[in-house]
Every structure is written in structure tokens, then in C-alpha cells.
Image 1 (cartoon, helix red, strand yellow):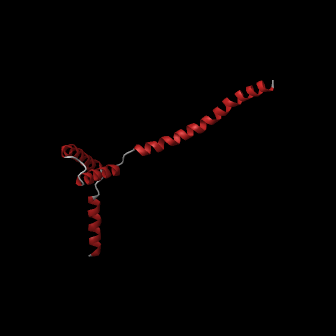
Image 2 (cartoon, helix red, strand yellow):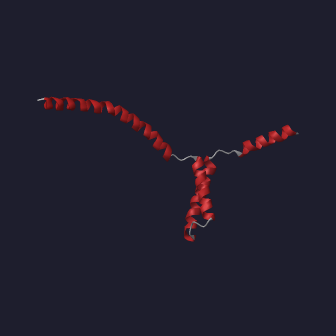
Image 3 (cartoon, helix red, strand yellow):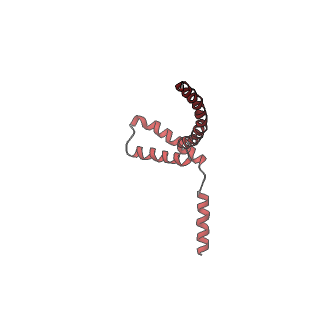
Length: 105
């Protein structure tokens, strides 16, 4: 008889324990989601690095002649996109250089 009682108590306790464990699991899943999203996000810096990789690979002869047109097309598209999206820093650099030159005179 004690074994039947023990089984019933175990059955009653098991669902409670599972219910208590669920919030911890959802918290872990919620924390894992932003980490996974951050890994798959692409930034402007990543795209600039990709353009550099393509340039270095083509310089080292990593592509066959029949692949060069496709690689070049993708490289040009990437450069065009970066030119439109990336903030221009040249005018600010020119202002800083002008201010430094003017202060030195």
C-alpha cells in the first residue's frame, strides 16, 4: 500500500515541478534569441570587410576567369550599396584639417 501512495505523491509532485521549471526555460529561450539574432545581423562594417575579402581573394587568384565577371558584378553592387548607405566622413575630416591648419597659422 505504501508504494501506491508513493506513486500518487510522485505523480502529483512531478507536474508541479515541471510547471515550476517552465519559467526558467522560457527565460533561457528569451535570452538565447537576442544572442542568435546578434550573430546573424549584418552591419556596414561587415559589408566593408566582405568587400575587402573579395578584393584580396581576387588579387590572390582565388577565382577562375569564368567566375570573374560574376564576382566583379557583385563587388560593384556591394561598393555601390556601401557608397549610398555609409555615412560620408570626408567633409568632416576636411573641416578638422582646415581648423587645425588655421589654428597653426
